[in-house]
Amino acid sequence: MLQIPSEVVVTDKLSECLDQHPADVLLDFTHFSSAPDHAMRAMKRGLAVVIGTSGLRQPDVRTLVQTCQETGQPCLLVPNFAIGAVLMMRFAEMA
Image (tube, rainbow, N blue to C red; front, side, top):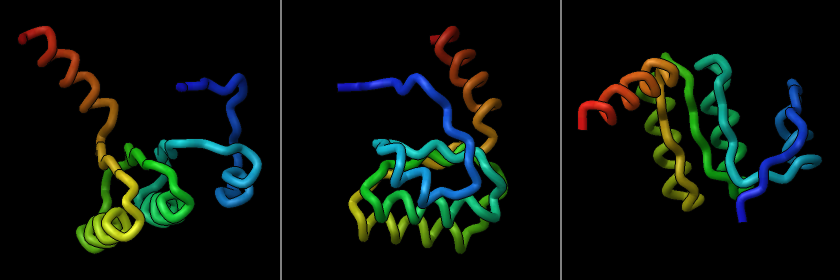
């Protein structure tokens, strides 16, 4: 069953946060230099991942694909998340 927590946790310690606040999905909107590491650590803990960060490099994407295959966890890459959301709404209107 889907549960929505009543608090928002802001921290610079991902492992500590995941230990103290169990989750099913990690939404990462950090810098492209840190997002792959966050995603890989989360997938290794059994979380699905959504990365809304632009600028991921091809080697990072390949590593994320490999981590998905190894862990069986999904990872959705959505660069320019805000632009993508606007386009999705527009395309839905057109359909």
